Image 1: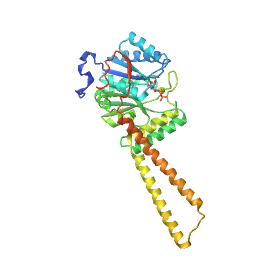
Image 2: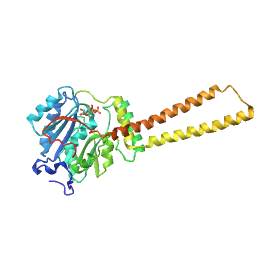
Image 3: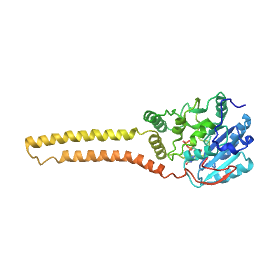
Image 4: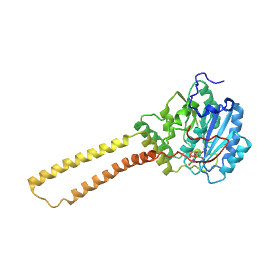
Length: 335
Ligand code: UDP
Ligand code: MG
């Protein structure tokens, strides 16, 4: 039984798909070198989804894995054609893999989920319940992050504080990409084609009625995390520059204040020269001023550069990803 207020949008790629082919649920799984965990994942998903009794599809986006992931996915598709596969030509990153999955997802409700079982699939049942109550987005909030290191927890908290202060949209803290979205929300998200894909920000940007449920995030079922600190730092930069121009303004203010200081100091030097005559020593003050202003200029230029670089990336209008092959999907990026 479907909720009454779910009117499907006309521009959907599903338009030419027969009604009986539209599953209730699409799972989107970005996969990068996950051969250790895939068998466990499919096993667990099958059990849970059979129990739910909804029609479903599982879209695995192979993000340029270099291990046996591609073969495992091919086998899985041969066994069960509800498992569909999109193989990228190289690694494009999780955010883009997720986007590709959303692009092709047919389901009336779509759930992105990590391959490593850190997003407990048992929650999908609750997601569906909330969705049927009329919520368009149901997201999962981590209750405790005690499986993460203290450093990761601290940096995550700081990150959410900073980004929520700097950007206009409010991104709920301690959420990942694990959530249920109604197809009409997905249709909006896939229209946002920026290269800088900070998914949590995009999810928040689209709005719609949302509900949250809390859960404890378990550890990875197998394998290792693909995100080191450098990657997380870049992720945070993307998030902030993608959703806020406050750093540009701050850079402007810092520049203005320094210039004002320099003018005052310059006037003071002129007055002193006029009253006390030419004074040759002064190397220290000169060096301090030169270094300080030079350093600040570099900082400000760096901030501008961050934005300019991103502008350049967007201006090229390259496709977000390149698909090498697909199984069970009618692939079309421009939907
Ligand atoms: N992932 C991906 N492309 C990448 C890195 C990761 O598709 O370049 C996938 C990965 O296979 C997993 C999910 O993104 O399904 C989350 O990755 P991971 O568990 O390494 O991140 P963490 O949970 O440590 O933040
Ligand atoms: Mg993980």
